[in-house]
Length: 334
Image (cartoon, rainbow, N blue to C red; front, side, top):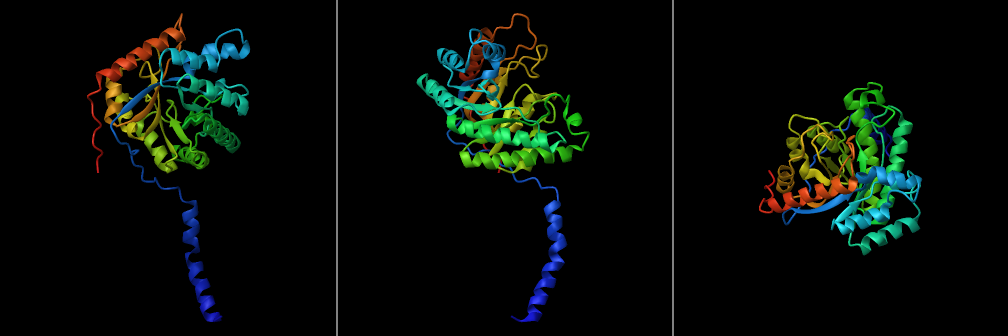
């Protein structure tokens, strides 16, 4: 070996070392994010988010003679001819731990016998917190439920992009860290989840929930920073807290892999009622093909009845789907 050449190579490599280190610690650039490739025009399939039966499912968890369980929920969906059901993780026995395989496969078999697909599931997580331990616990929980989703045949697992109790908002959770820093917390955690999701064929669907993600541009910025096709948007139509939430929905619809269709535009009883025809028109124009889970909330309404409100909302969604059949997908900008 020529010692002069070896020394020269060493010095050359050393000269670039500071630049390499700087590159490692630099805030990741936003990755190019393109709309999801679709074909064949819009295809909209009503689903039901289990959270619509929050009170009754919780009652059954405490006393099996009350409320209803996930098996009975599936039967309700079948009787109303839903295409699918979105089975929120909170209502499985043993949550946040994974249910037994016997339970999962019995529920999957039951749904199949009823002609229902399982359009997704979801868990609680907080990636806005300054506490790395809490973020790590959320990552592990999502990884666990990615594997649950794979066993159920569900294509997505919902992940929150916002703070959770006991924190009142993301600023409190993050100890007032800058927004860019907190977005970094989220992106790093979601990217790790997405890598696990890719191994099991399950997409991490990030939901806007009216805290860290209040707008479409904020939602899109986070997804760009994650930079994975296995991390996409769950669009909550009641949680873009802007003057025109339909504009935010239109921005995010091309990136959506799942939905939460709400009764009102702010998930509050006194906020404007969702214009279902306008909403479905926007979704059709995006070319979306897939499930559209509806979710009703009690919103402190006296006499709230899940059975009544779900049936009413499903009828409104179906009417809007029928009324917009002629709406075509808009060509993608190039």
